[in-house]
Image 1 (cartoon, rainbow, N blue to C red):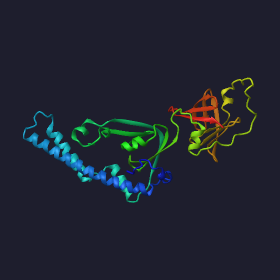
Image 2: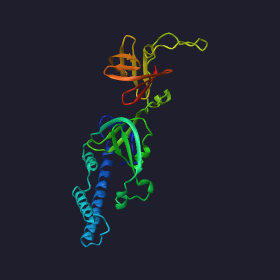
Image 3: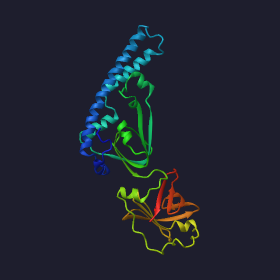
Image 4: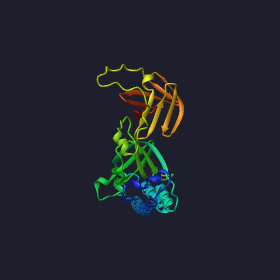
Length: 299
């Protein structure tokens, strides 16, 4: 793939569901390399399988359990790889992209990383060798309910956590770009972070002045009154305006969708969605049924 595992310059095209030209070029080169590797693996499988079959027939490998069956399986698997020219689903998707199919699928969700040792079978057969022991590992990025195998460079370049958009070749698990667009579960994001991603707070509504430093503390409001007002999430640019008459406006300005909201206990119902509410000074946290939290700040 490209020297930059997740090229920022390609994000504009990826957000529109397309590949950037340089991504198509890199995918074509990667597909050729993967296909050649698949052919080599197919030849190795056939060779190892044939040796096991010959040894079993000549009874030279009597101490190996099931050598004949294992050899036959390896020969069949190697032949299948050669027949497909080493092109699995991901390689075929990369070949289609290099040939002009520039579509990109967008997968959104919370990011989780997985780094584990490669399977003993692969290591024993020598199918995934590397000069660096650090490379002999399987690395995955989980986005929502999808899992994507990634290279070491992609794994290192990925954010530690957060809500992300993963840009993927259709019908495959080939990850071509990744963009962190929001905080992790329960993470509080400040205005400095918001400014760094180009998100700025909506206009602050006028109202009575806040109590000064010398004023006595205000008594806590009931929850159904405390949630009323305009809230915003700086990382995602989301606005949530809960009005006292039960009207809710939500979305990214200026496109705010109108619905109704109700509060029963600590459960906020907005339209067809329900969230558990928790309040902290100047913050509103909404948690859905799956445990995913979203933090808003008082506008």
